[in-house]
Image (cartoon, rainbow, N blue to C red; front, side):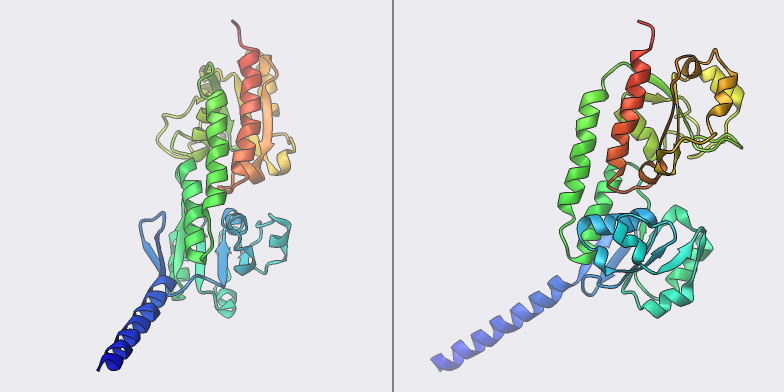
Length: 297
């Protein structure tokens, strides 16, 4: 009887371990739309429909699981070899289906609602990324780690630490009026609801159009002149200056023009919610600090 009792107990223990193992294989997170994304096991075949998400997956150590991505996913170098299944605002649903992904990660603002709905109809779990602040970038790294069964905390912590160091260095310095130019014609900027506006604040800058309601409002030249920014910043691929800021040379009394504080930073880093954003915030801070050094005392 004693042997039988031990055997039953052993079988019960084994069953418990098996069940625990099966439960631990299941992964679940809440994405940026508030939807719960549950996978029966960590993802091994991922379609990433945004450059920043592809970059994040590589950053947490799951880049080798990405089987399809977008035209502009070019970092790190290994991402360039991944098959392209999307471009601009269009997605090749047939090609995605052929790849048999067990997870699709997508940028919520990157595609029209109808396109996202079509992607969902494929039946594959969908994780929507839409970081609304710098903490949201770190959160995304952690969640992608959970979904892939790897540790996303180191990458998230490194990003957070870099931003915190910049905030500590520049955040309490004298405020500098900043105009961030997204587009020249029509003239567009970003409001305080955008991650980049928070980045400006990290550097001790003040977004002159932070109070506007739209996240990417159109503004007039007259409004910019009235705000009299001390620095004007735009972003281009690779940080290569183009002609976008030439228009401000026509206004020599504008503080930013008068002091030569027209800067171009790297759009590939600044406009993507990836780990390299922290690197480019450092460049942004240096530009703003130059304007601060030339301000009247």
